[in-house]
View 1 (tube, rainbow, N blue to C red):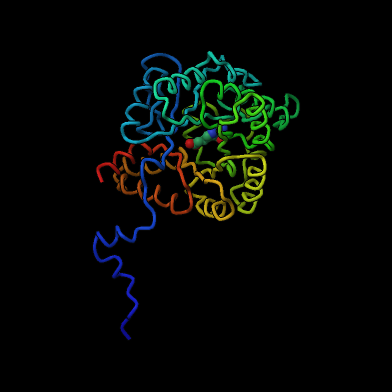
View 2: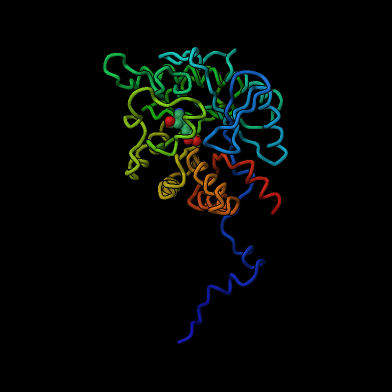
Length: 328
Ligand code: PBG
């Protein structure tokens, strides 16, 4: 019996393949994470992330400009803070004259139309390298004491011009807390993109190198999620929705495509995914060794994240992918 049903007919030419293509990438999908360092005229490559640099406040403006020309309009800066500015309570995070908030303000001044999403978590400023306040005696990460710090951090970021606040800390109740602090200070129009399902992942390694933000003691498993759990993501989702999140995120992306789909099927909010540092490093390493076609792999991975249900993707590939898409 020869087949009468022949799916291959819909793959017979490039035009037909394009016509029936279900998912498409564009530069509008991307949010580009950027690393900010102190100093002037600095542009230092992150060792474990070839092609990704840490920029000082002046050179970052040029980089944002190049990205804007490529159609990338959303950025997520992260600060690399020197050790002498770190303390137990991450006080530097609310310093409006500090590196991070000055950089955010400078980007918004230079490019008012771009969206800047700021990161709320203590780790870049914490002498303990944790996302929350560490109890001196027990080493426990103190949820409610952390909320206070996160609220002040978010408020300072809103004042600096942040369009979206991105709490990446995984403390309980932080979305509601931040929403209240923002609203009480007349920042009703500042959005919250919650890191809803953020897993305790080995894929964050290169990011922690870039910011020198690894925990001094212990790990993040008492607040970040267990990679074994999927239903728990829906519990976090329900809470973030109830607490007022505007967008929700799954992180990492690649090993969690099932979670992205699950979250997408259970919410009317936009879903984003964070294609994290280790996912970038893996593909770069293989490509630089000549073991895989880096560009095709990058595009396939980004497409898979979108197909899984992500409306937008935080990715270190943003610029390279936008260039590749422009070439067609
Ligand atoms: C911490 C934070 C991390 C990342 C973003 N925010 C690392 C961590 O939780 O230790 C990782 C992003 C990446 O790996 O690209 N608040």
